[in-house]
Length: 404
Image: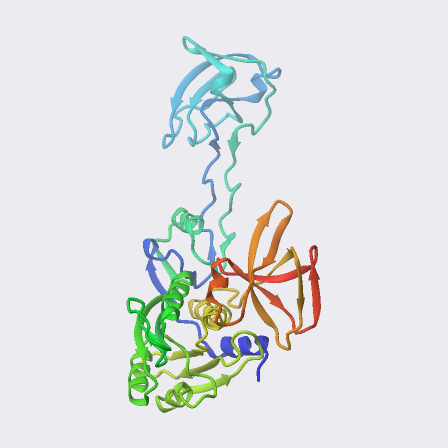
């Protein structure tokens, strides 16, 4: 049986990132950059005014006060026709290029106009005041964005400034969700004796969306080989197929054998963790006519499915999209409360993570095990508890994985 670390290694070694493709800038939000981006320009491209005021020579105002002749006015998008000579000023608006001869800008609040002259209040001035110098933000050739970064509004704005109408990225994966089990009924039906509603489908689709993945649902597969096999074949047309239920060792746990019959190669089955021990992972290799499909058989208990998705499926999605790092990144949080842990496997306990001025803090929520979906309603993270008997007390530090 694999440890969580070795199982993650197997997943990431098996999953191959999508090839890069070029998409319009307007279509790449949330995708990962497929190659490094170096600046093609200086930014700003010229010395420019940081505020409205007057471009002057600091040497003309040794005490910060004086009277200068205004020879021109320019706004953003204009270039001064005249240089600033001794005893002269040019009225300038925010963003306009600094005129030749000027070395600072006096803000408008410290001035008043009297005819064709500007009277400047006595405030210290020096070279460079209220100016943004050419290349102060970035210079041509500077590395601006690294491959693997997720493109969010600031990165998109930088690409626009740099002149990238088409961006090299890796596409979003498609993910199919198949819930299995005779006990399941659709959400809009009232369960009969021994039945439960299919909550895992809703949960997994939401997790897929939160991971930046497009998904579709395959409904419920009963514990009948023909029905299960047909739905598996349908699901294998996606980049990732996620099944919940049917992966343990029970008489009706048919998922592993039906996956094998459908041409899916098992990579591993079973991880030393709680919840989620029966996790199954495999791959149906691609060829010239079809993409590879990565298959996760998740345990049917809802918290097990949730935890396995966060640890393994999300990592596979990030790997396909070229997001770096792909694996989960825990934060160290200060524990609040008291809890004695005696588990024989690493446990991912639903928890509440809060961010304070003093750093992240975490409290465990009351949890009755892998079927206790109610506990996750009060949680936004999971605390990672090593398989060591220990009593945690307020002030101790533990690793936490956020669900946000």
